[in-house]
Image (cartoon, rainbow, N blue to C red; front, side, top):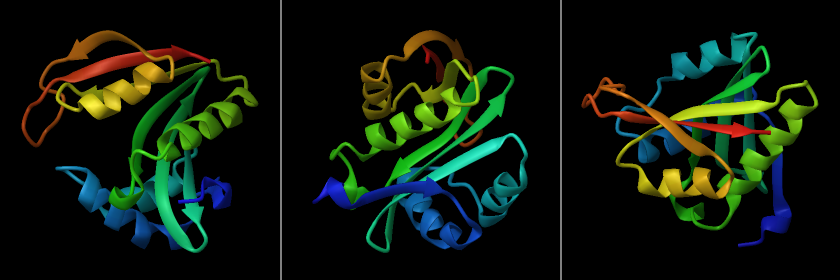
Length: 149
């Protein structure tokens, strides 16, 4: 796959159908169409998508509050995983938010999601705590991670 053709841009309403397909294959409790529609209207939300040609392959979302970016979601289409796309879209988000004087990023990730935790650790996040019973689908704990931008 050619990452040279990867384009990262702000999410628009027309992207939601493709996002929902990635969401379904990525998460045990996927967000609904309404959840994404409401995020696009949220003044604190900032979402990016990555595409190759006309195929949407990844997305990331964050809430920008004060000097913090709280990453709410990140997913890559199954057939495009392990090729560096998550790293590229994360780095683009960091670049964009730093321009808005945001200097910290935080997120929660399932304790069992070892691949995501590895990615975040490689990107400079550190584990700072655990939220007990965080996920409503199975009461799994979440690891709280922070990064100085």
